[in-house]
Image (cartoon, rainbow, N blue to C red):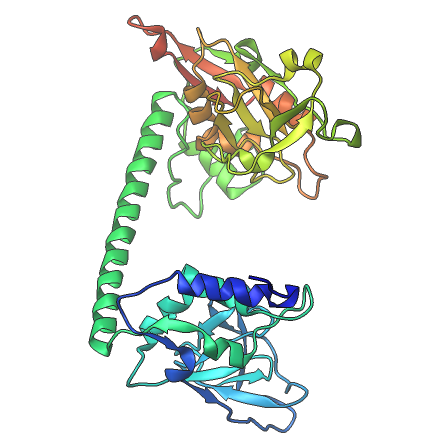
Length: 414
């Protein structure tokens, strides 16, 4: 079959639709939606009409605007569907919430009302979030690159499954119940995880300080004031620092912290192309290896750059949220190296376990100081992050049963 290039997009769209099946009737949206074209006329100010914005998540929110828009304006009410012609392909399709009784939009936001005898608003809300619906919307966009739009006609041509109203109610009830169970399980899991971290930190003498008593007025000796603040003085008077029962050693004495390779035009993938890890690959506790890039590394440089099983990888990052985010290398990819924004900690595993190091680094007493940076400072450099990583003190205790029972805890540098 021969096709013109300009028809390829539509051809792909038809192929995708043909490969999709549903046990419910598939109907175009024009059969279940009615376009609303109610004009709004105001004298300068919007008054009780509320301008809106539609997020890529489909959430419809109030927009701060008091004056009228230039050109024609149109009304939208709770339960109406509206979408952005430009951003619909990115997910900007949503229902007007009850919290916005009178929404006003421009011609860039077509508005539709679901037919009450065909669609429930709750069913339509979830339908708009379905992956296949968003994929179909992307294929409906047309126009020049960067300014592609979804027209009302193209939107209404989309075919969607339309169960009966009773079936829609049953689907929504089942989904809502499952979502409530999932939320409850997530809350229980968070509570268990939080309790586990507290026990972990307490056992190592690094538990966060207990809450301060409610004492708005108190007397303190001037010599006892570490810092001039209500919290600092009260904490110095009411709490005694917990002395750790384990000796401390710098992390640098149990392993070597080193940088990776710096990208440059000279090491673009060539004869010695090697896979390498970026900050995006190192998530908190796990490695995301779905997208791996390559860099040129000569054979003679591989011994010092090649990752080994058990290496702890830490992000140096350009923000406090990234600094110290880490994972463990398990040898997933042969001859893999790491970028200079990812620090490698190679441990003496006869004395220190990578899993424990990572757990301690992710604990609250460590995560805060290791990511600390001065306000309004320039982005944190690899040198400063590597030094902080090397200098952090570990508390150690040797179990009589096995070296695998070693316990370590990072505390602030002395």
